[in-house]
Length: 130
Image (cartoon, rainbow, N blue to C red; front, top):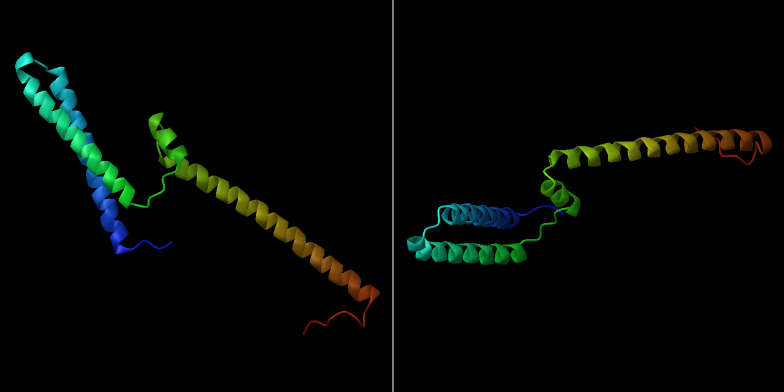
């Protein structure tokens, strides 16, 4: 499925929503750490800002058709470099490619041997190669 320009715009909006939500979490965390009773209105304001940014994030998520592998999210939660997932998938693909190549080589050998045996057994029946 080829990405369209609208997909890029939607992804950009979603990325901005995620960044905004993370920034609001950071600001709220600082407010909570430095909390004083007189700062309570500021705390409520920042909590409401976070709720609004999470609502915007949820809206953006429903408008975007992006699939993220659960394994990638698990790796991020565990603090593992996500590039390792790409490397792992690439290595698995390479292994499968090598296995398929080996099977193809065996089948080609079988085909050649079968054709050779067929030529010996039925010389007038076997198709002559040009």
